[in-house]
Length: 477
Image (cartoon, rainbow, N blue to C red; front, side, top):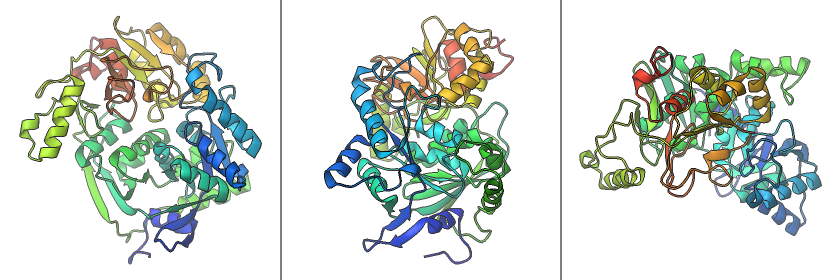
């Protein structure tokens, strides 16, 4: 039922995709685009064959190999033997169903949440689904990106629809001014630390305000990517002229007169002035600084000049025990300053921060410098297209000269189901979205931060403080 006084942008897009309301209270919605990755669709195809069903609209689906691919330059499907079967199944299933496939040998291959925007598969006002939780990334384009499980992947393949309970609406308004050198990653980490990993549970989150409007499209994609770490079902930003400029001439974007018509529709996509949200939060960005995680959830975040919290100061017993467990796992101490904590690995990549702008920012900081002798540092572009663009700008030469490994596109060290793994007990600072126990490898310890913080940490060999982030600091001069 529509809210009195006006509609939110989420209401408008959801209602436009509503097929019908089901007897169990869920809504059946139409899926404009369906994106597959190799780890969550093999069983879906097997179930379709068993039931004698086919893919309903293969032209609305694309597939990419990203999670378990090797990122070693020149890799093939055989480079990571543990992932070979699922990669080959994705290729054969896509071929049999007439689905466009972006394998390791395709020039547009990349992380699903990177290539969906850069190919123009995700459009304002559309609904895109994928068997991966971080599908909310495409919300940066004003698209509803919904992560689904294997059974839902099967349902979409067979019907091009998805049955869901409609989330409630939340708006987070970012006010004030973001300090120079800070990024969307700092914004979303600060937000999760403030609201908590369950703060967005049951909500579709609209990010708004002058700070959001000032972000580039790639920064908006980063922000929306971590809506899931906020506990939300999805997150999105109203499209504007930046969105339109980004989408023009993309492979799957409308062309010619159709693009002109689409632009008029996209510019009208916004929440009504009188729209009522189920929850609304205001964040003053003026005092936000560079952020870094200390524990084992994305809400365990402080300023890079901050300290590890003391669980004895926490009233809630369950949270006190969780903080104590995180401190033990991360091998830190209550009240300890994070800056100066030695690292073993620095990773720039993942669907959160592997776009060209991320690599440009990191390269500017490491140019003419060198990674600390004891640190393994690697840069993994989010797509082969990003890699080519970066190489055309000479970024690969900058990273290599600084001691970074320069890899092919893939999820890489974000999740330990490929060759790029953090050794047991090692400490990694990464531009990923999750710092759970064992996330980057058994007994690995992960600190999440922005590309700028990770780049400086790689040079310093430890977690930096705010003085190290100054462009005029001795470390960067």
